[in-house]
Image (cartoon, rainbow, N blue to C red; front, side):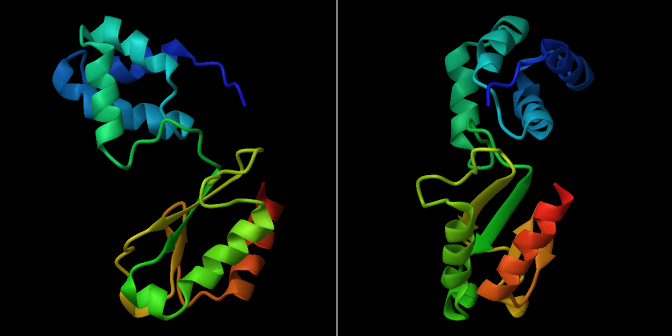
Length: 158
């Protein structure tokens, strides 16, 4: 998907957060919130607007794990593979999601940008394990079959 970047959106973000170097993390967070990733075209634009080198902006965007330079799906599914979830069989859930969506460890997002499936080390819900989240909503005591049902529900909402 080649989404056109609306630089007016970026201008509004910069205007709201401050046109200064100290605002770069908040600016990148807002851009990612809008586009679900940080488009590469924004680096040159922000560099000129904030008088910061593209390299510095890129360094910030790649240093923090929560930033993504690749498009993410409308539904961001995070499967916990921390100890409590792993022991209670979170990996078969991950495998089922990947199989049904045609994804793999190296391909986390569907071509239509509807689903992204990633693992996380801990979701902070060990007592509810195995657990996954969809756009920050927690789904406890998951099984591969429950994960399949969840995908069906999400597909109806597209």
